[in-house]
Image (tube, rainbow, N blue to C red; front, side):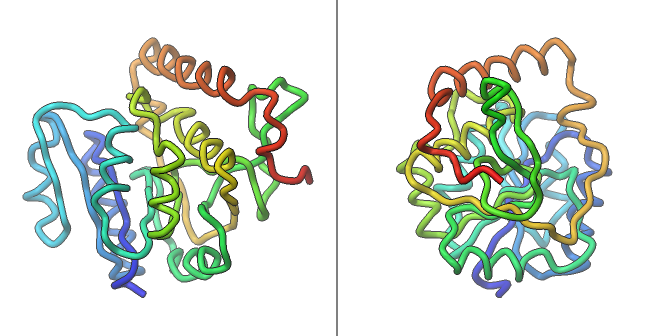
Length: 229
């Protein structure tokens, strides 16, 4: 199992919590980890994790470009895009791989259905089942469908900030006839620094920019949505 899947993490400056995330993964799986870090504040990351695959560059790379870098470079059969605010409490890998083998293009921990009555401006969590959207707290794909994801457009390079960009990626997969599955997994979320500790003006400006693209491209496309439940 461990040889066929790789976990992908983006270092987010809060390195103590980032190290806790990596330690939680290592406590429950030997799945290899790829870490991408950028900026001077993350320069120490390669030395912190000598047993993991770490790429560091001085210039910042936005969320969309970083995710596409993972999609293009990982060679294992499966990959997991995972936020460092998420921590393992058990084996979250085996059940996800089983579901990917069942024919889903994406499997994740949190997500939901687009709220049509709210004019596509929100997502309702309906628990386990087929969904329209998976969030990047923990988003797994398989190798063939990773190529599928890239053909569907991958993550939008315009998404410098993560928030709502995972919704856009999910809907791009749905628009290309991909199927997404949400399931409960042995994971917990700590403090989400990418949201709570981001500059509020930057956060709101870029979140709105990402969601505006979603509404422009997909609002009204009920044909790409999964069955309501």
